[in-house]
Image 1 (cartoon, rainbow, N blue to C red):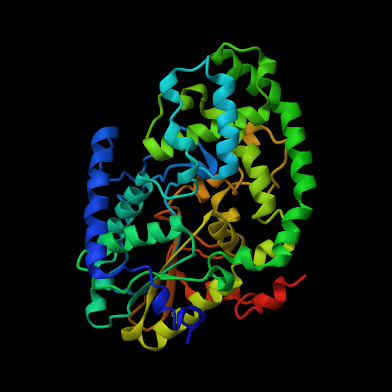
Image 2 (cartoon, rainbow, N blue to C red):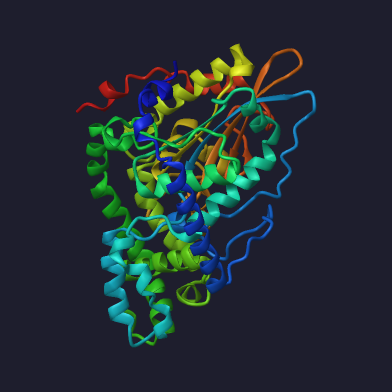
Length: 451
């Protein structure tokens, strides 16, 4: 029995699937709200484009850059046995701390921006951290592409009712994302309901919650984060202040770099929640947004990335132990293979990135992120939250078997194929993945996380 199965055993009472009459009413009500929102906002359900890029790099508040039109074809002599996906929730509303800072900026700039730039809904505390309507749309669209990509694999659920599994952290935004995804993936309501992992027991997707050693490590890097951001501000701050203040008709000293970082975040929410790029986002051009992404990543790379405490590189060990156990089960008995879709958070994907070492695959330089980086140096780094963890970000592991029963895997990050370091081709021998994970499979997570 895998760690996921052990964690979820006996959790049927915690299932997020409501009773059928209530469920039908909720689906109907949700559909009505969705239609009204789409009509009001003018959002369109469009066929995704492999080369589609949003105008600005917006770090962790980046709307999902769809890649569904990319060619994912595999040789016909390869049999897809299983997929394992780790996904971030869709676009959500700001948290309480962000809302407080956004309100301060709104008050500061109320006489300098059009009134329609300030959206009361964006700073409504009752919506804090909840999945937005656009987040539901993102999740549904992603699931529909997955359904097309893996139609043959998903059809096996008719032979094995447990062939697909959905798990989520115990937060509204992840549960809602998982349910939107599941419902779009299976319009006939034949798949198992989303299983919610109790937060107190979650070492798979909300692993930081149960790791005191990580929490201590995060606290230990704060001085370094502050120092590097201060260096960044001393080099780039005046330019940023001059550009943004000038456009708003303010003196350069009227806005701090922290204020500008909040405006940058508001732009991200404007894009992610409303597909609105003609308000706050007009204050930024590509270089300015890229600099602010770099300033954000000084923090993320140390709190969650490989530049932080040593524990960051092992936080996803229990998750990958479960994934490898499921891979082994699929190889032993393909007819009983289980594909899992696990819904977590931005840090979940960052921890996965650390363990796999994908910074090397995603960037052109191994130079650590620092405050004295030039823009050109920053654009070459592998750790870029815009590319790694936009809303609805996802990492998939596809398991294949050839005609000689040799096992292979392929990685997809946000629906784009990426090569694990050590792989000569996109389709890579499974042994490369096993070697990469060897030191972390079967980790004693609880002991590892004790102070």
